[in-house]
Length: 419
Ligand code: AMP
Image (tube, rainbow, N blue to C red):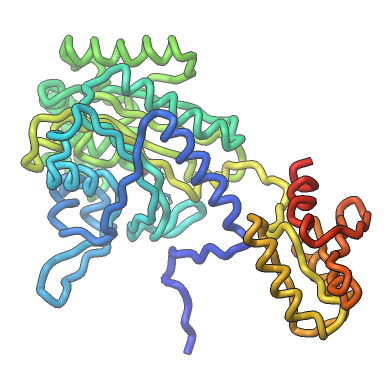
């Protein structure tokens, strides 16, 4: 039987995990510094949740969702993104009744049946945030600056921040009319998907990756010319605040992004370094002021973003391999292996990460193993040491060895590690 992971879904093995931990903790630490708190939502949701929020004519809903009927004949879908669930939970738990502004973050797997490629998977991880209750534009600039901060603490330096505004419903409607007029003569040249979608949502055409559609879209009128005065003031406020923060950005009037629910502010951060290839969008986000209301909640403005963890990992510089273990215990004779397990527990109780190999191999082979996993310190315990109440503390990096009272061993290791 040839049992393999589903195409486009990857195993993450322990050798890779420290980079993931570094990324996730940089994200958590940064966003918690801005008052965000973690929320966790189900991975499976009613299909209608995504169809209604992401939009019927989007790529995700039309061709990428993992949708199935459960044994109770309900249509369920593996979540393709996190915002729909956040909004559902916000409304379901009447969170607005408890606090005027809500700041949530989440980290977890998402599912889209896209064509797998470098940086594009069918199960991938996103870390995202949502802010409910603040109409902006200051918070818009603050979350953009916050995520730029996350990226820079990861050592990713070559990025470009794109911002745009697609206005509110009034601007969107005016723009729809203008865009339809522009697209009319090109209709027959658009790809089959765009021809089908143009009436339902012509903005989709601007997001199409088919070369001819992209060419046509490049000369389309800009949505920025159709903003209302309020939309314009909002967008100006966002840009002024980014300037105060010193966050470099570029206005890209063609940025519309692939989901229907956005209003006003849109942004994307692109990775410019090598190694990312064509999938260089590190994260995307925007404002979705109508969504809470359309889910049956109160009129609540909101903004959020989601970043793709695999892409950030690809853009992060390599770092020194570190060990998952502080101390390796070596039993000098087979007879002290029981005592070695006790020593291990003593050290772990003192907060150290301890490994040993008590299968009965030679002293040399145990030391080789300690070296292989990059352990800094080996602690050798033999019959004499047990008798005397000491251990041999071997610093594998500085190549020194010391006899240390067993009661002080953990303390000595902590001191060495913090040097
Ligand atoms: P989106 O939810 O489409 O706005 O995507 C937000 C971010 O998630 C993107 O900028 C990517 O970094 C990441 N992402 C989206 N789709 C995929 C995928 N299929 N594989 C890996 N990362 C993805």
